[in-house]
View 1 (tube, one colour):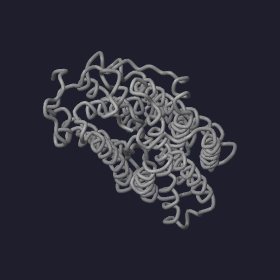
View 2: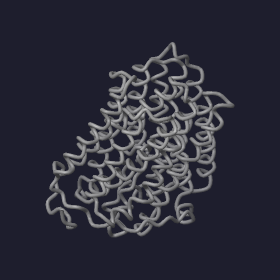
View 3: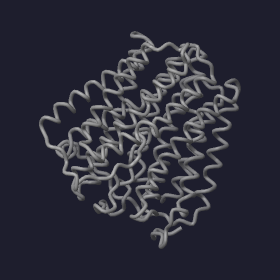
View 4: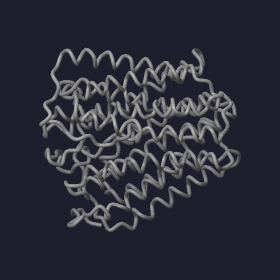
Length: 421
């Protein structure tokens, strides 16, 4: 492969990337449900909880290491290596080792998964034309999230005993290498250097920076602690799997419509509404019994979808206020902020939950959403909205895999016409 761009890319040309990551997402969905369910059921709840911040910390390392490694060996070679690390993590889980090794396996997966995602975002961003790049990225996110949900559901169809679930993860991860390994798309040029500038991000958009910071903790807490919570309440394997599947659909039923509305009104109003939605869903989650499982699934669908909305709308709001030369350091800073919060907040819950109880994560979500909502109210009084002609179109994104496509732009910047929200 060469480092020259594709000459006549079409939506069909990027199918290999989308297919590969969707297949890989199935394995991710299986493991994200299998690990907390089995560890919790076997009495190692401490390890199940610790695996959540370990996953996020691994992701933070992946964000830091991805750029230098891509510049060293290129996209295609690094993708093969990071997929191999996903397989190594699954093998560690299947090897009947003590629970602490499962925690290490999740950290390895977190690093490898973020590297995979950054590589594929970069490839998609490079191969797509300006006319359909936004739609391609939204479709990519949607397929990835649905792959995660299908993987969670698939876990409910196989026995938790034995090693079949992690073996399926090994199989689908190896399978996911084939489409992208056979693609004729050339390697993108090496990415720009990542620079983090918190002061600049704060100057551009405090609401955007704090929103992405909040969404890191919110997303990792909701996705990581929900299966533990359900398992501790004696929910069956199949129902835990179904609950995780339903949560992923929040991207379609909650984030997408709210995101479209945010194109038409002040995005901060949507962020405030979303924080209220999270608080309401949190209170409902505290009150709804597991005996009314269908109602509980609806509550957690709203939970998951609203958290996804905070990330995507806050990210779009920050980009609305940025100049073209600020896109790279802003995106870098938001990515690091998300990853840091996704590590610290779950780590705090891991230590507090044994003292405060299994619903600690729900109270934490309510607290974070309430604090951010209060801050948004204050900012609404302090600063005018962005003029409509200076705003971006909303693009579907997932808080589980934060945006790194601008970071991997080889020129270190991007024009307003090609900017993604």
